[in-house]
Image (cartoon, one colour):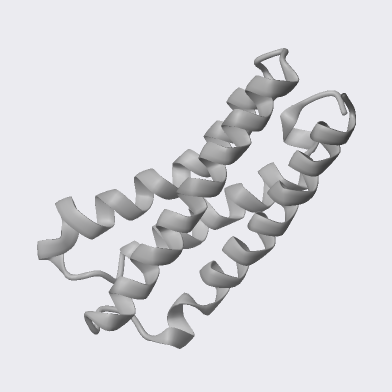
Length: 119
């Protein structure tokens, strides 16, 4: 790996950000500073923390930032489910983003496990 950009988990996280931006364009205008902003921030946090952890130079720091990314991924999933419960989006509309979150969670787990085993 020459860069965090080579990591599949980072690439899929960037795909998630794009998907979230597309979905939040469908939210009601009154949610612009609530769910829209929160969803976008949480989504952006996932690849950002993966990249930051990669650049920290310490395995423990990297794992810590991967855990933060995992938490942000969970936040995105929760907010997507809220959008469905509130009737802003349908289950079908969030399916791709939710599926990306599941994939990202598995990739983060796998990477964390490798880092833990490398010591």
